[in-house]
Image (cartoon, rainbow, N blue to C red; front, top):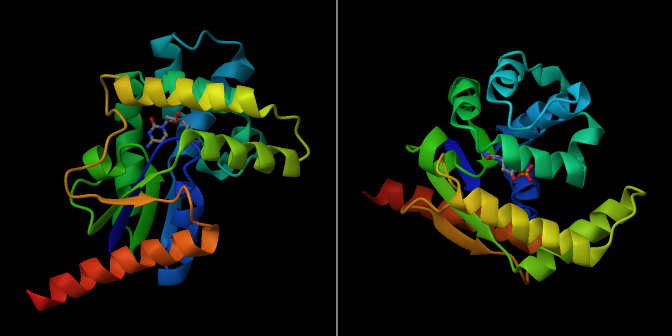
Length: 212
Ligand code: DC
């Protein structure tokens, strides 16, 4: 089974993806880290983020072993990832890695922006996670502070809104819910209730399928 989870920045989709994968014994891919890894490599090289040829060659040489690097989580890298992820050729280079990950047994949960629409349009279950921007900013600020980083909530909110705008309005694979996605608004759910709600969606889809 393939479960696709999409949603905007800091919506909690990553945590949901990880928890759903653990629940079902599937592998999990946070696809944001792929774009973050390309962005970090570009920043480290001092490259211009708009340099398409450079970004494409960086994307072709990505090392998945480095996807766990803690520096990938920073605001600056996330913002740069939003910029380079709008380059269609960068996205194309990264498609096959994601599809292969999804196809390998026993099943997979992928979270990102375009999993249900572009990467895995035939996913068994699609969940589109949303949450109020103010609430996302508050959660992201608390997470950053817990990691010992300085974080100004107003600035985090501004970053989230800018990123939402860019991710939604780009021409290549914009952030949007697939027509067959199930909406999950976790603005007022804690992590456990959000995970429960996601499992309920998966189970309802499975049950519906068995009846046919
Ligand atoms: O989910 P995240 O904050 O780690 O994602 C960082 C950026 O990467 C996001 O602003 C847009 C891009 N991204 C994307 O274009 N497609 C994906 N499937 C995942 C992330």
